[in-house]
Image: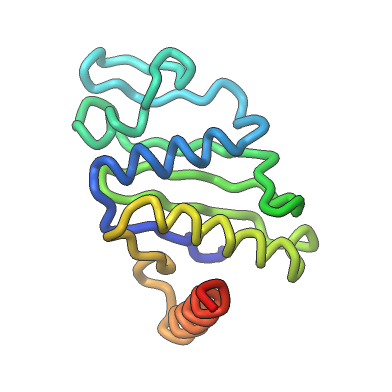
Length: 151
């Protein structure tokens, strides 16, 4: 299993903004995505509320996961992404395979840059528990990409 990419240390507003940005880019989502409403003690479809992420932040909904499809950056389609929404972070998961090549990885990093910039305190990292070698490789690639886009 490949490690998740986390946008961590987010402000409450950052969680909502990043989730909204991802949803606005998606052409479709997993079938009938829903979340557990703590307030209503039942499953609620995402389409029934304007901002499900803000409910997670407020403790009115449990953390949730859905799959988004059709996200593209600069005309390059990013393979399906799983999106986990937590009270102070968003994690992205993905299926490894032939769908991922250099253009798709660059598009993913471009997306991460845009999402990162929506919350000044955001940290982009691999999930905790990932071996240090992979953490360092990811940090190096992320730092190099950020430095290249700033130049």
